[in-house]
Length: 167
Image 1 (cartoon, one colour):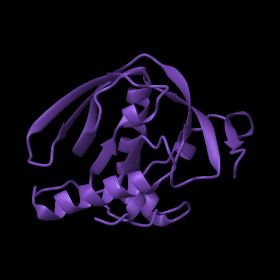
Image 2: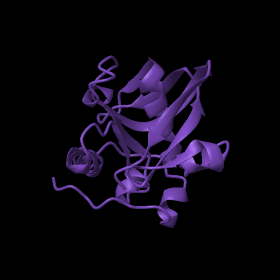
Image 3: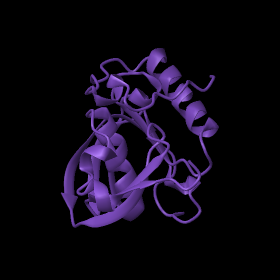
């Protein structure tokens, strides 16, 4: 499947909560392939993408922290249908970027550990326990599905939001 064009801020689709996926059919599998192709076409070390970032307003996200050599641990490729965070604990601050806001990064406060419930592409239930970097990426992508951007979580724009050096 071809990479889809990225939806960039301030497109209102990025602020729209996504609908749950009801049918685990060929359409959803095609969307997942499009998301993977779009992730592959993105800058190196891209570790996550959510459906609204390519204009699909459904609860589908992909996370693969193994694409970043600084963070080789984790579950590898996760294709998540209807993911929700069911438990969270601890606190950490990470510098986050986003494909939909390519010119900025920000220091964002997130949970240190999360438990995510989702389904795979066949509708089988998944429960993922993640911590550290992988927990941050999961929270970031699930935020997209809820119509939230990392900008919405910036505590102080003057001290925590940064223009990318290569922008």
